[in-house]
Length: 294
Image 1 (cartoon, one colour):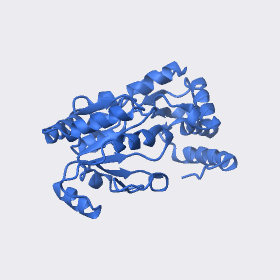
Image 2 (spheres, helix red, strand yellow):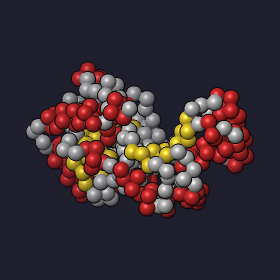
Image 3 (cartoon, rainbow, N blue to C red):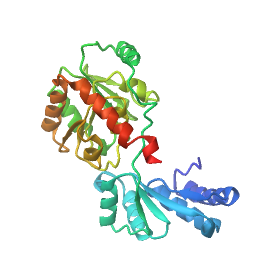
Image 4 (tube, one colour):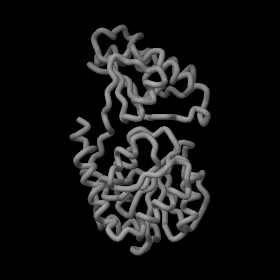
């Protein structure tokens, strides 16, 4: 960790990274999202070792709404398009992200698509965890529990989710994600847990997962991990959600609380919901496991 949290520390961090690259002489330097892509490229150039290694950029999102973020992000995206021919390849984790960035002017030597891989051994059903977590959170075995795994951020669109939940008051919702404890309102319907390191365990206590993102998603880890845990998913049609969920859940238009609520109610009332969860897990094992990603 280079502690690059401002202009001066960022500049010092670039030189520190260049020195690290010279010392370690890696075969590959991989950037991870916009700022890191440019930082990796500048540091490799400063290190004087470009000819001896491969440089890859990573793109993790799709159609971001730049109006919700600062000027610096817009600058980074533009600089990325301008310099996109410099790395050996750019790796996108979604077909949607690849298409969006082509339209933004990204023209790399190679554009690769590698889906996020989910650890299907770590994320799998376990009835014991279901009972234990429900007991800890004051939930009964008869509650219909919706899991949400998303930080508090404009792209995750919590207002739409909360408006949808108002329409299904009998549902109980367990929320995991940085910033949620500080930003979400108190409600008997919600169990807001904040950032968690035991996500698989909490997911096992749910009957389904809701993803209400308004834009920007690529290959959603939250969706894939929930499906690997055996949960049907209701997600907005953002990024590659439709391709990931397939026939193991419901896809609705973004920013539409009525549609989201109707889809969640449909899953809630489904007599064969467990079978849908089995389909979800099989889809992750067959198409999105770590072995497939490798």
